[in-house]
Image 1: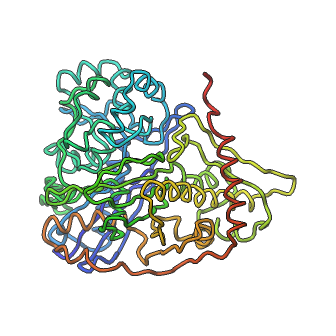
Image 2 (image 1 turned 180 degrees about the horizontal axis):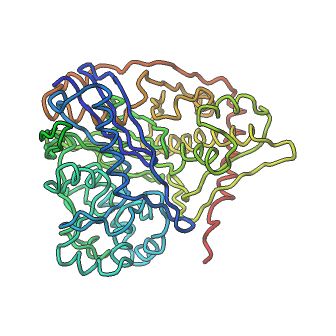
Image 3 (image 1 turned 180 degrees about the vertical axis):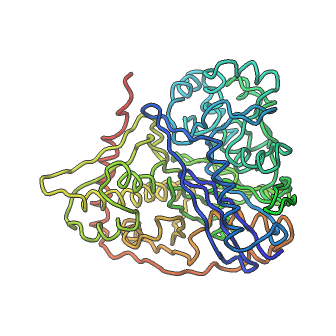
Length: 499
């Protein structure tokens, strides 16, 4: 058993990533799947398409590298968080499309929870704020709006899961209905103090506890993937690691000490600080979340969530069609007019931390007659860096510490223009590792530790740095740029609020 495979199920694609004994990436297979937008503010995925795409890339990866089940020590799973699937226990058939974490349709349910005075209770017991981002209100919407489902749920005929749970259920042929602490803490239903599903919140949202998964450590026994190989023989691979994508990236970046911070530039942009056994309650709009459970010990994190980051680059490609591919955005941004005063606020799914405005919408400010595609591309890239500064400023305020540097990962951090601008607008050193697939690495590490493929010495020591970006602009210019960003954000807020 010479390899570990991480199943990295993201918001826009499913990937399988092959690691060797030295935790080096040998191969990646990726497959995009459909983004479904039934109405304005609604975002859906087909759960069966997710499962099929994830299974397909796993088998393609094994075939490409001539691997049998006996060559794989374990599978680790990392996943887009909060995305909600409900399916029939008997048939395994989803009752509808999955409601994606970016979806805004449950804002009215959130408003009702606020009116009922549950804001402080939810904040204190789940670490989250009331927002359509999280799974709880999505579950309620599905039970309320898909005919016949509430009765089926009450009769114990339905199961709920975030994407990790949906994959585990399918991998194990329905034998295991489970999630890990990190994903459970993103539902707005899980009490991070008692480590139990919160009965008060289940009652408020009319969700039967019977549909919820068992909650386990991030490195644990999640059953086995059983499949038939090309020769007709039954094969099985243990599933031993599970973590939500951002928590997996924190682990993969080696942020194991209290106070260490990483930022992932994926579909969204997510900054996490390891807070050890301490649950820090933010006064600046950040979230308290479970980072992972390992050998029965819970590690917590402080998180800032930006809903749209890499998805804004995808919008330039697929929506506006002004770029052919994400990598070309770097070249166009460098060619843009450096004096351009254009700002893009990519609030397509509202604004996350530290603003938490469900009704904000995307906007472009500062357009003039000489604005072209280069300037819009540049402003879109810069928006990722500005949003990251929003999070770092909030995190420093909450923790009363000055962060010296920022560790980065995720696809967009390969963009040198973005990383240089990030260092400039922060006034801090930005460090990029040689392996930017920290999310997959984290899932692989959890799985490998779970089966003894690696011991915990694998986690010790500093992670190597491929490139360091140092700030090059003056404090005066930095302050001027950021003040304009804050002005643009303010003007995008409450746009969709018709009350």
